[in-house]
Length: 134
Ligand code: AMP
Ligand code: ZN
Image 1: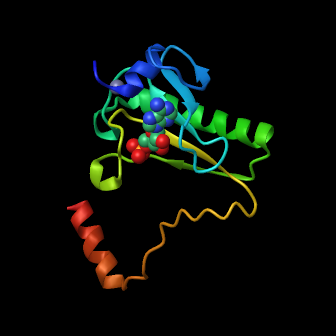
Image 2: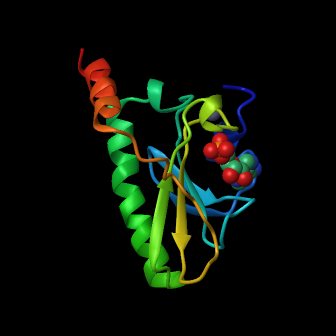
């Protein structure tokens, strides 16, 4: 992908604050961090998002996510971590090269990444379950 900023970062054609690299993956600091230590993990090969990324690559990202989460705890004294992926523009994906955000969390960091909605009745949940399983 000639015009993809994350392909260019993975190749070293655009500078980044690299934290980790191997044959498959590349990790670097997000330039607009939610908190200090906010990292992005990307595959070196171009995949738009989770829908077109091979399982083997996702497996490796999952393992590296854990490793880097531990690094954030050990080196930055993070207490917790959020691991986030946006796949598709409706999910607020803005760079269309797969990436996972690894966001360290600290006591009293006053960030609020809320995924809590409103409580649903059992019949509504049942209907959705039927749709998913049909
Ligand atoms: P998303 O909205 O999930 O697609 O996230 C894209 C992320 O990429 C944002 O958090 C941006 O701050 C980050 N980003 C964009 N360009 C760069 C760059 N050149 N170096 C580091 N992070 C970047
Ligand atoms: Zn790319």
